[in-house]
Image (cartoon, rainbow, N blue to C red; front, side, top):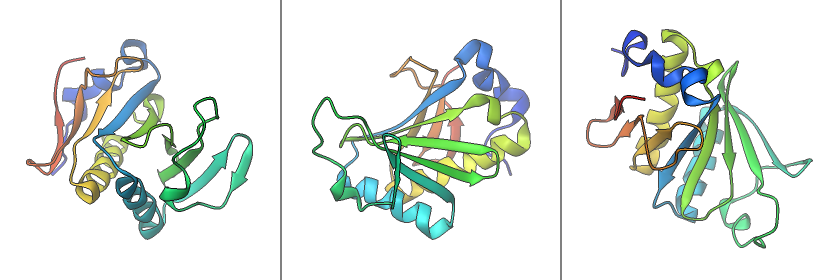
Length: 158
């Protein structure tokens, strides 16, 4: 059974209402959580590309990424859990796993199911909620992975 039904949550994925990029976050993260995400990407065989600025590099261990100067550009990890669905992880903070998804890629029940599966995998691996905020509205999640329910749930109307 689907975590969410498209007809009930489609407004959460409307780029005109929410902005084109949704802000995804896992609060209270650690370097070990970042490492768990990197390990998950490798284990699942998801296509990925790590880059620091314009330079594409081999995927590092998580402990090699923190401690960058405040004015340094954030490295990012592009992950495609399936063709046409991209999540961009940004290594900007040690205490928060932060990534963006393009809502235009998440239209319809099939894509919603892929997205929910992706959030479940991350949430289960970290045993932490994975929250989705409208673009630029951190702290106002509309949906996310609920650890206790072990599924993605609607948290608020957009």
